[in-house]
Length: 263
Image (cartoon, rainbow, N blue to C red; front, side, top):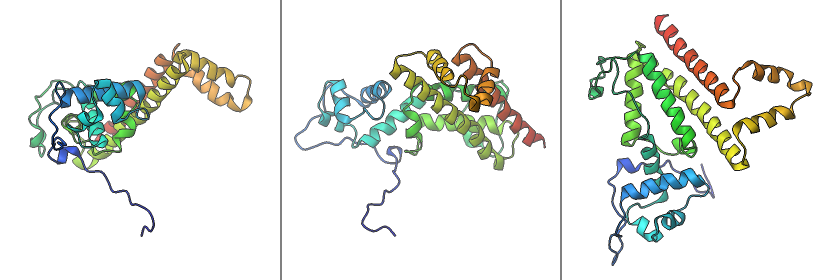
């Protein structure tokens, strides 16, 4: 039982309620603004300054309007962030469908069949999700903050469900396979994006930063095993090493799904 403190309740979703403008008496709709322009500006601002630097006043200045003009279209900052989250999700290139209808999942039938192996489709979706999270580092913390049930997020969810159902896994095991693949991608990409952001902030390339980090442990015996492991990764650049790691880890996940299915 909470005493003397405010209990934070889970957020609802803008997608579960009718979106309406916060009109105030005597106010008219600002000229030249709409939801699309506001959300696009929000994404640009979040990319440039991150969540910590984002505010409704800062957004209004970016748009050249007053903060009240923005509130004509969205009621809260949370609503706007949720809209930006889904807008970014729409940047992914997803398979048009999967390998055909799956019994029990007829509601997914609006996706056109695509003659590609489910493994290739899963690799495509995982790579697109990785690219998205690295391009927009602010997405990672927002993913758990909101329900993430906008149209673009649901298209993503539908695509991965179709692909994994076509792997032949029993329905009861599909959620676990989804968690295996996409929580791996989430963690990998979040770290990748934060490292890239740190390098940009320091004004150095990722290769320069990595070389400096490795130099700090040179000659330190307690780091011998870690240094040997890093050297064995192969690749002459950070990006090459990262690509090898991501590809191999994803291959391991897919192999595990196949082994469980065939076992």
